[in-house]
Length: 152
Image 1 (spheres, rainbow, N blue to C red):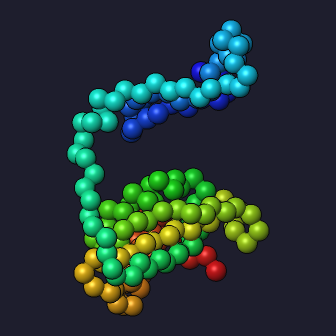
Image 2 (image 1 turned 180 degrees about the vertical axis):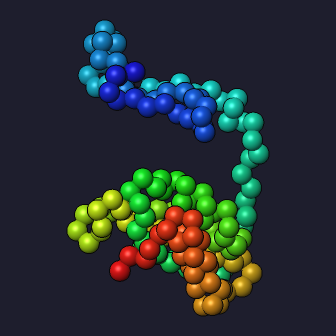
């Protein structure tokens, strides 16, 4: 691979392969006009786990809630996601960090993160109190564990 244009493919701490542009020396030797992207991947470890299951499509509405907060600069977003994902009800389909901000309006030594929370039940429409309860629970959990403060 090209020294500056390649990446390791990892699952947890385990390296399963590499992907990137072909090394310039090999590109020239092969007389290629543009560098091809190449990869090598161990497939067996990918087959070890359970295959994804189809859950069916829901006719119920999808609800998205965004929540922005500040935490200490050194707090990893992954730790926040892990903590939140472990304690949400089954109707929460997705929790992701969609924004990270440092600068004007954010205290020095802090960063602002924004979570998107996607909720949907397959059998019924969620109530406002259920949705707000999820957001309140996440807010409370982040405050307790990471001293997160809502961003205004």
